[in-house]
Image (cartoon, rainbow, N blue to C red; front, side, top):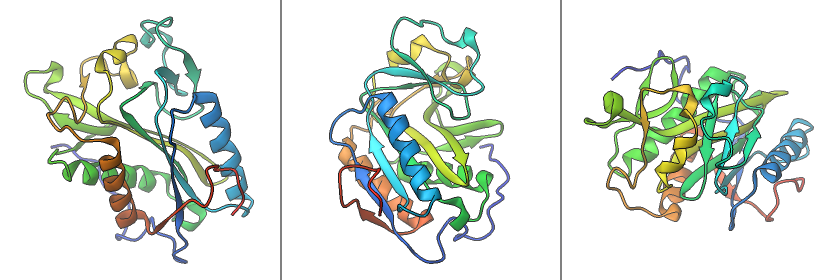
Length: 243
């Protein structure tokens, strides 16, 4: 297994010293992408002003493609297949759709070490720990952000199971992770996912792990708290309400 050199010093670097909990919210219906972007932006701005608590927002999107700041036009293979949105995050083209758990994180890095590389490593570790609860060995690869699993017989002998893309403004994060639980993997065929043409994509279902989104959500919350600190159920169904 190839892994990146860790920069985080100590297990608590990504935790808040004050122990203030992160609001945890799960959308009860698919969220369209423009609404998600505006909601994240509004909440992040409120966090930067000190007017709202940090938040993790778990959602599904309807089928769509997003382009990051490094996306190459040639990697959009079928632009008419699904709507395509500019994401404003780092990275390249990504697919989102039903059966994929997207976790958007609005975290205040001023209280969590001001280290973006450490944050990305924490997100990778969060996914790997979650996968381990379902007997899946997630791995890292030098030069390729995200989480991979070995799949002998597939193109490249490995496949990507989770993508990571974050944006940081005024030390507050938006965007986050996308974990493939049971999406229609054929939908990735309209893009070159994350600009990597010689590897495939997979999911928990594709690996023989038939688990529900609520089961994955419970694991995500447990493992998030282990790395990032406590969470609390959001008091309302909107992220833009000030804390």
